[in-house]
Amino acid sequence: MTGRVLVITSGKGGVGKTTTTANIGTALAKAGNKVVLIDTDLGLRNLDLLLGLENRIVYTIVDVVEERCKLKQALVKDKKNPNLCLFAAAQTRDKTAITGEQLKSICEELKEENDFIIIDCPAGIEQGFENATAGASEAIVVATPEMSAVRDADRIIGLLEAKEHIEKYNLLLNRVRPNLIKTNDMMSVEDVVEILSCELIGIIPEDTGIITSTNKGEPIVNDEKSLAGQAYHNVAKRIMGQEVEFLDIDEPQDFISKVKAFFLNLFKKEA
Amino acid sequence: MKEIFADFYNKIVDFFSKTEEKDKTKEVARNRLKLVLMQDRTNLNPRLLERLRGEMIDLLSKYVVMDKELLELNFTPEDDQLALMLSIPVIRAKNEEEIEAALKAEDEEKERLAKLAKEAEEDGDDEDDDDEEDTEGEETSEKDENQEEVNDDNSEITEASEEQPKPKKKKKKKKKRVSENETSETEENNNSEENEQQESSETPEQSENQEQENTEQEEVKEEENKSETKEEEQKEDNSNE
Image 1 (cartoon, rainbow over the protein chains, first blue to last red):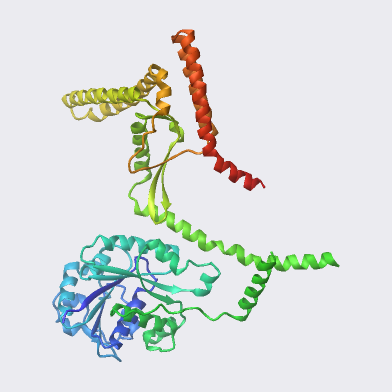
Image 2: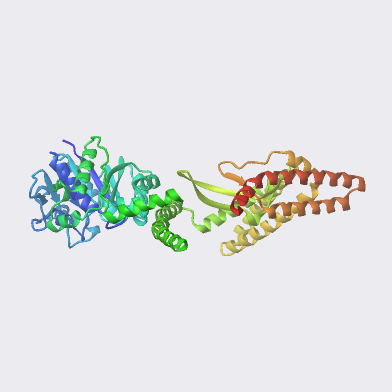
């Protein structure tokens, strides 16, 4: 078995890299794939929190690199899904504790027994980014429809293009707010795709459920009713090669905005 | 009573149309972002861009007479691509002899520079930089002089140059400056200067002929300008309405 190695990256912090990693990983594992999630954010690890595995970590990636334990010992199995494992980052060290080459050889080893290795990349374009992308052959660039996030995503895309081992990369647009797009207060999905000229792999709506699911330490894909969860499931399906239509993420309008829209149309006609 | 209702109606319209004003923030973000990304994607900083501009002027002035102050060089979005727009206010194209002369002058300068460089090498490393700077300064000033001389010498053949197709720059997009009253003024000034020079140097008969030719040229140029300015004039008219 030779698994695929994907890196989830963005450049800008806070756009949802870790959330995306946790959810795509969980969704892929739910679909029957063997998945390993690697947190490469040394010193600022959070993937363990999102998966609710923070109390189970014994060994980290640095322990493996410095040969204090075997690779298999450092893999933490998910509570619900035995197909899913977490390979945690060290919280007490910084990005220089491992090298890209070391991470690459870890990925090579993990590839043999897993379908997907998903790497959570730290924010920034420094050593951490270089390490995280070293072993990957595919990338998912996470951005939100905000100027700063799109700009950073563009920078990341430029850096990814320069890497020969990255065979393909896709854009995942996170925290999309349909109501704001409707009133032209937020750049639309089309705008961002046009600006970045990058193929889209998912549109995730802004969802308060993300906060509550993080509180519980349970990825939102486990919540069948959640719109963001469904969107992440679709992303996982697209990664597996299925063709899935993009989710209709229109939020139901509240009463006042409906009335306002009605009057606005009325006055437009008269004018 | 009617007024009160009208007032009330307007207030309501204002209230609802306020949301429409906000509509533009998305467009603002989009346009700002596009521009900033284009700057990010190019590695040319302003200093290099200025240098490029200077080199373009040096290069182009071999082939055309232009208004150097108004030459614009900048990156602009064009569909999905970044275009390097070079806007050249062409006063007139040079004729073959002028171009030949300019090229010859350039070659001579190159030789002279090479000589100077050799001398500088012999002088020693420390003075190297100073020498180069000095020579560069001399170079540009002499170039200008050469060009002016060239213009004076070959003013008889301006007609021929008008008829020649204007040299096109490869790879760079070139748009002629549109509707510049300044440009047409400078053209006229140029022509009148030329006329004066010709009158002084030539027999009266010849100069008369030249004058006629020149006025013809001016007419042609004005026509060109008109056709170019038409669009803008129309736009202005529309906006005035």
